[in-house]
Length: 357
Picture 1 (tube, helix red, strand yellow):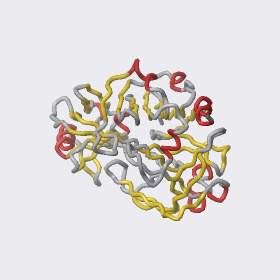
Picture 2 (tube, one colour):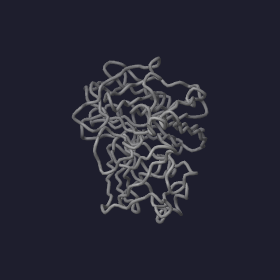
Picture 3 (cartoon, one colour):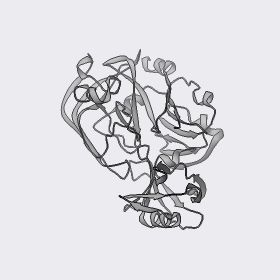
Picture 4 (cartoon, rainbow, N blue to C red):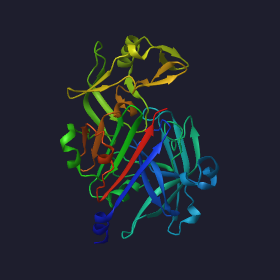
C-alpha cells in the first residue's frame, strides 16, 4: 500500500542551466547521507552496475555535491564483498575501471522502504573517469540501465519499485544557442505515441539495448545490415572498419594522433542511420567538434562488426526503452521546453539546458 501511494506522489523534476558542452543523460536522486541535496547520476545503458564516489577520496576534486559520505548515512550497511567494474571503450569514451566496497542503503522516499546495493568507489583507473560527463563535469556516479535482471548492484530495481512504468526515455534537442537534454524514468509510453517514429524489439541474446536491421552510411557509400548497440555514455558513433573507412575517405579526413580532422564543415554531408528502412539523419554539427580552426570527427572504428550509436545520434532524436516489453521506441522530441518540463506523477525527470559557447 505504501509503495502504491508513493507512486502516486513521486515526481522528482530538475531543470538546470549550464554553459559547458555537457550532453550526458542524467538522473537526479537523493541519497541518505544528505537528503537536502539532489545528486546527478550519469545514465549508462550498457552496464548493470551502479556506483557513487566516496567523499573520503574525491571530496576535494569533485566537491561535496558530487560525492557520497558513507559515514553520514544512518541506514547504510557495509557488505563483505569488494566492488570492481570495468568500462570498455566500445561503449564509452575510453577504457576505465572503478574499485571500492559494496554497500546497501535506503533509497529516499517519504513512504516506501526501498533498499538497494551499490558500489562506493575509492579508486578510479584508466584514460577517463566514468563519473565525469563527456565535457569533464563531475557527477556523483553512474546508474546502470542495461537489460540485465541480475547483477552485483540493484539501483535499477529500487528505482523501478518507485515509478509507474519500467521505462527510460531521453532526447537531446538542438536550437541556435543551446541543447536541451531530457532524461525521464517511469514515464508512460503513451506520452510519446504522437511523435513515435518506429518501435523495434531488442535482441534477446544480449543484456545490451541492441537492435537489428541497422545501416550507417552516406548518400554515396554502402553499408551492410548489422546490429546496433544504443549507448548513453559514448560521445561518438562507432562503426565497423568497412563503414568507417568509407565515410573517412568520403570526407577526406586527415588522421592526427589517433583522431580524424576536417577543415571545412560545409563539405560534410549528413550521416544516414537506417533502422528497418526508416532513415535518421545525423548532421555534421552533431558528429564534429571544433578544435583550433579545424573539426574533429566524433567517429571511431571497431572490430566487433556492430554499430554503437552514441551522443551524436541522440541529437534531435529521442529514445524510449521499455524494460517490460524489451522494446526500443524512437521518437521525434519536442522543442517546447515547457512540455519537456511537464510534471508526470510517478516519474523521475531531469532536464538540462546546455548553452552553446
